[in-house]
Image (cartoon, rainbow, N blue to C red; front, side):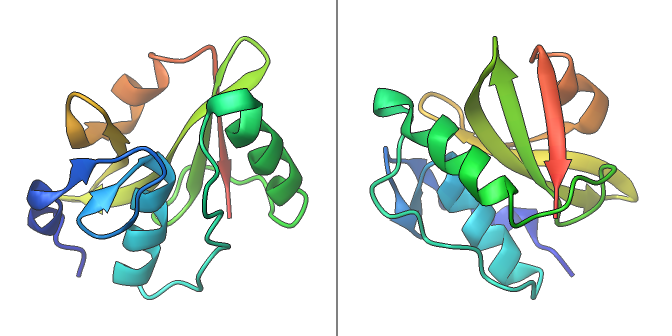
Length: 126
């Protein structure tokens, strides 16, 4: 069972991949481990700088399948035509939420519909 309380100790760190210092992609990797899902690439050093997140997310999506929101699905968020943020779907109290990590709020779990309203386009991948 997924334990969201584990993520209360996380602090956002640009490029963070080692718990508890994580960025938005670091949270995906950690949650996938917690859910017992296969690991995705580490993408060490990849950040939004110089469109790195957009470039790597698009390239990696070629190895994935678009899907409907479901626990464990990766989330790509677009601002304009660029991927600018990522998250992962988790189930909390029987409802789907998106786990994300940001500089000021660190890890949050937003209900799916509320999360989707924040972006021009949101895609789900597994």
